[in-house]
Image 1 (cartoon, rainbow, N blue to C red):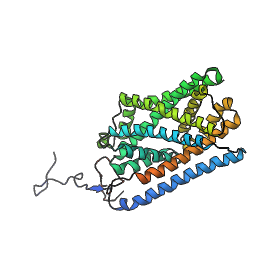
Image 2 (image 1 turned 135 degrees about the horizontal axis):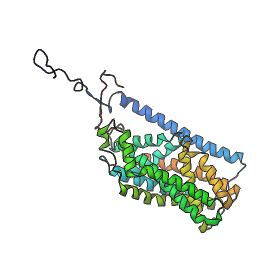
Image 3 (image 1 turned 120 degrees about the vertical axis):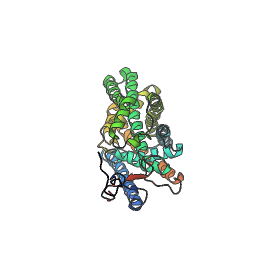
Image 4 (image 1 turned 30 degrees about the horizontal axis):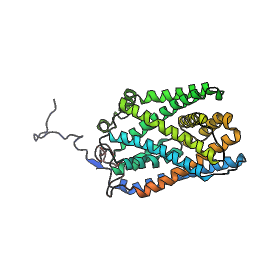
Length: 355
């Protein structure tokens, strides 16, 4: 039995003495611009390195480009259209959370955050999307969950689509059976992780120390899963057709019956590049897979040139569109870029220190 104090009052409760710490003020506010600036510099440096590496590979291989601009512009537009579709699914996920944001804000966070893939480790994609979405009212944990689920499901759709595409290739590709099996296998692996019961269990386990945060997470259910897979189909189709447009821009043509192979090749290359998370943007892995799968159809020179040109176009398209949306779509004035699941406050440590 708990004993009272001599004066009859109750003993102090240590938990009750913990004062909330507002993380949207104080030193966090002063540090935020520096943190954002450092992230921006790091991402731009990573993107610049990506461009330099691609150009160097052109030089090392002795490749030259004869470009037809319309094809290259079409490739960039097709790539960005695919990103907008995935950004729309990201919006759908956030809409099912307790703090939804507008479609424009969600797509802005998704597209600009995509630049984070060029930083080794892939984690910067999530960090950037959290930083870009919370000023519009989203919760950091909800954005992180939505970002992880969208990415995993996109990879599942890509792997499965690659499997179907290589099956359709039939005898036109000697290693089609192996590539179809590889794509389907990787796609199914990601699909298992996206199964609602599995994914929800994983998120509950990871966030068990913050039970109040779980209530705000996006609602992942069978409908969410099916919708993501369906929206992934046009995304991967557009990205594959972007490679067709690049080949056209290089003064060559690909017969429509071969388009499914290019779509499957782009999907498989991107998914395998994601699996090797340590490489920025899947650099090297993506290009190697595309060259191996497309050389029998296009010849080595065109396979290499179109693959490297596709990479450059995608990077430039991301940079241009990101610059436009960052300037055109601004968060509401007065909102903090720092958010948490408890309304902007976190318990201060018992010793009173800030961290």
